[in-house]
Length: 555
Image (cartoon, rainbow, N blue to C red; front, side, top):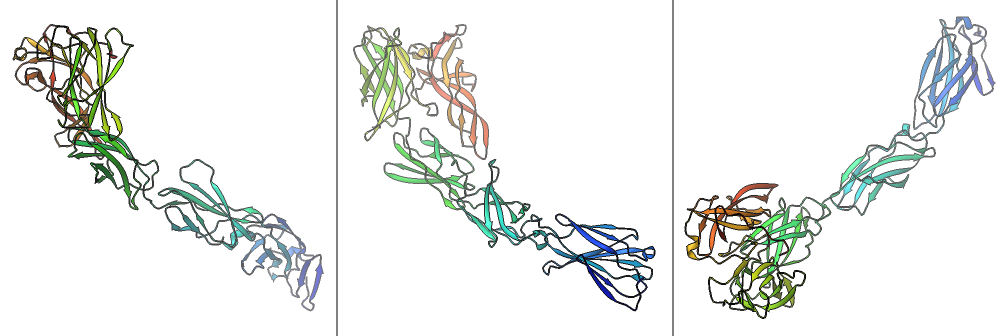
């Protein structure tokens, strides 16, 4: 035991032992410490001699010597303990650790030791990481320091990890000096999401990344769209727009600019639909069209100009073969149109399909042109109208091949003995309903007389391959599109019963009834059953007469 009458100090092997007089235990002996990197310390000691039998516990205290990171703690052990582990210390910190023995009479003097914990990588990320300025092409971020107790050594820099959202590519890694607390990413895409995160560095390495920031750049004006399709009807036009390939913002509306006869007009419609329908179209005119889109940032770039001729301008071809001459007659819409300047005629003898000849015939004001000096009795003929705008040649849709039998004894005056074949150049999208239109037939059809089309229940009227493709007006007044549908039609010449009969119109034609499933894009595609009535030339046949075999598609 230590006597009250004396006080002495002994310094041995770096351990300071303070002894105070009194009836309390002597200080523990041989105090040593060992560091378990990076921040765990193990203490070793021996019991005081004499007096160890009176000890009830040992008290251990540890205090940080850093002014910027004060802290410490204490713990107790049993009377026979010789070792104690201290967990949870701070990295790169000098600690003053003491131990004293205690009995029922009190605690003896303390024994001290100093030990410094090791440095380690940061245990946390910078605080306050946020976006402060976002434009169409830039994102600026800023941050604060890593909390001191998580630094584990002096911070030497920062690492930013940056990439575009949903892209499976390695992120961009950016190093930032320790004296900077902000960074701006440039050259980004408008209206696009990006992901960015940050970590801190010290001499031991990189700490963990913090929470990921997901940031969307501002909208920009859109890139140029494109005109996907233009469909002309008799006096209206439908235009289908393809949006830009790059999304720079939510499209709010489309704008169409078109020039006809040197005058520019513009129309706008909601971007909820890519399809736009216009009325008041002039036939036989050159339309120069372009479109652009709008976002909240304003109008975008114009598309490339598309030039289209409104149609039909020439149609309802009628071919007659007499002697060595083929006469081709047609209808002009409007009748005084000067847009169609010539017809390219392709023909070959029926038995010589691989030997095709062609000739260009100028358009005649009389509505008919002739080709003379054909010396065979059977020809297959197709026609392609040519439209000239200034010096630009614009070929139109060509007709299918049609077989024409040459009658050596007929004349071109109207006669029931001559052979006439009627065909149309309407494109697959047109909905014009001419007074005398026809489908593609498979053989020559004799011109009917008025008596042929009397209401006679013993006769059946047949039309070959009716194409119902085109735009038609639905009950709501909106144009609906019917897909291509080639079909034959047979019906009896009786009183008008829509959908079940043929009704005579004049000496050559009957009215026939059809239905199709029409589609229209407006806030998503919707459909409607469209009823169609058209006039056709037809072939009369007995009720029990079989359908003639169809010819090859090439003729």
